[in-house]
Length: 328
Ligand code: SAM
Ligand code: SF4
Image (cartoon, rainbow, N blue to C red; front, side, top):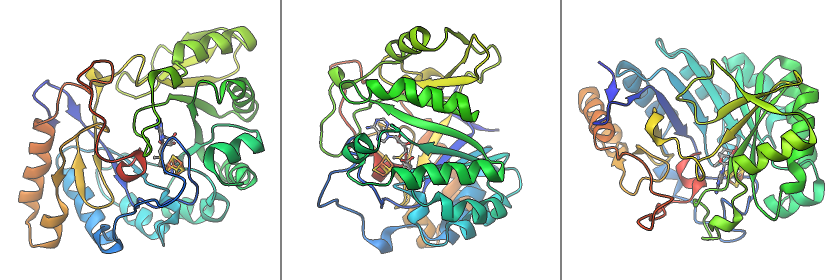
């Protein structure tokens, strides 16, 4: 039993996007204007999401992450969270958010059963935050992080690292994380942006960031008991200052350990962030597909999974959807 692909990888981690909409406009994800959102009626309802997750859990999914777009712009998200947290067999639920609305939703989400959050923050500099996200919302993000800490959430920060843009933010963010006891995860810029701006020269690599942290703060050492299937490689500061993570999708792809599948807000199942093909489950959820048939589609999707994306080869083709329409 379990969702194995043809390369023997077991899949127990599901990411569900609850919306493709967002309240900011990070340039490495969304276009500035004229964002093309899917029609609202195409977005899965709470009932459809819950049913899908229940079926996935019977197949061996144990970890769930809610994402988007910005999941907190989905109306009544705590109601969905409460339903999902009550699913037997699910061992872990987390949320990825840009933090803008967290001050308002941290408490209702806690009440609904959420305990783990990744908050997306690339810089502590207000002007650079505005440049990157095209919105002036840094203060609200920081207030959201504080609200989560006060409630006792386990918080991590996601920082997209961009050559020529955020070099000066790496060290201040790391210091902020050390001071607050929050792990910062630096994410390499991936070719998933809506405007096709990505090129290899704009990737600030994990090795470059580690060298900078070692020079400016403290040397790092790998964490011995880190989960080998987690997307981030985890390190700790040798001086005892806590942990830091690196998602090196471009410079050191970790496809061989992948255990994740993704459901888009409009009900398409994807075995990889970079997948070109997807499996339509919405039509089954809406038009009398039985649970067994949906389970079969999930298993088939996993079985058709490729060995890995080809970012580092000439064969690489960017996926037809940008990050906000997939769910990171
Ligand atoms: N809106 C939420 C947020 O920003 O955290 C959740 C969805 S967002 C698509 C998920 C994560 O994707 C973000 O935390 C951001 O770090 C990451 N991301 C977006 N575009 C990216 C890109 N082109 N390369 C690498 N990471 C990206
Ligand atoms: Fe919105 Fe997240 Fe994309 Fe930024 S990365 S535009 S916050 S969905």
